[in-house]
Image 1 (cartoon, rainbow over the protein chains, first blue to last red):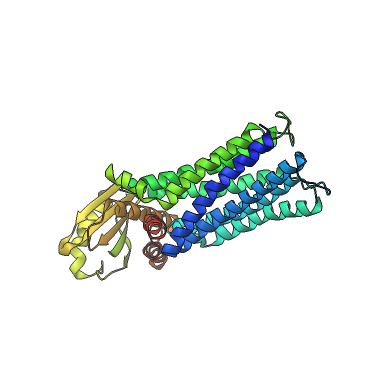
Image 2: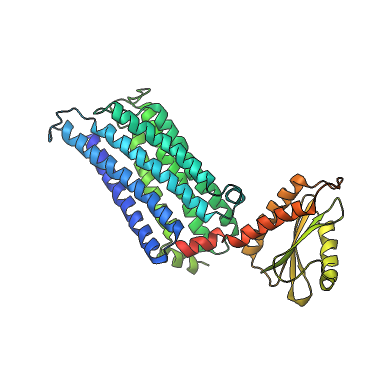
Length: 255
Length: 139
């Protein structure tokens, strides 16, 4: 099957998973009305918007390449999708750190710095957005994302997910019930897979035609690994962050 | 609920700062016997956590962290989880105090030490634990 079509289908599947997690997080937020639940729901909403852009523009790219629609301006739909996707993913990073700062506010770091850390982090992610959107406007209608924003965004995402992992390890030590421990472990694992997603995208960029050209023809295996990791990350995030009743019950029974 | 906190320096062999968060004053006459018991263990304990039952339903949890011992007095027994959480608080207090306290120097204002102690304990009391927050918001 055409690799672009596989990419479109893969992104559509990931979109369905992310959408499900977003809905479940908003259900939690509207039943509890807590800032932390809202921050997390917003983080996943931005991630959802990122996937929507990636999916829609990948679909447009597929339709153009196969002559199903016209593209008189020669727009690079795939790259436009990535540019917008990374921008919304950067917004998602900010809200992940806000969530961390609310939930783990007891820690010494947030006692000493308050909201300074999320604010600085927001400014740094603003650089990602500025570079991507600026480059997109400058090179319109054929924006190309380069190595710098890719690596910078990768670093920012690492920071967001590592913060989530590191801070979650502490209450994991305190937790006494099995389902509480399981919840924190799911969150940590979702952070690990979150890192793997962006690492795979960076490797796809590095080994693909854009930089080293070791794997030619676009869409290296790393591109698809990233989306497999995304599905695993969403599943673990759903289990860890919302702790559905059937999972809690299972762990309680094993208690 | 925490009643008071007492910080001991093992090198200086004494309590260097106290603070009240509930109703029991660690410097009061009524508490002197309890303070003596706490002091004995706090100075001798090299490392780890010690649970000490006191009179009038009070309990002291003593955390020995290097040259500092942090004794926290509660009016009820704590769950294992709460003890671990307070252990982290004790570590933060010991680390903060260790930075400015010198047993050989007489220049250290006890108000500076008390400020560190109060800030850390009050922050801990004000902010809920991550487990409680997760249960409240999402789980």
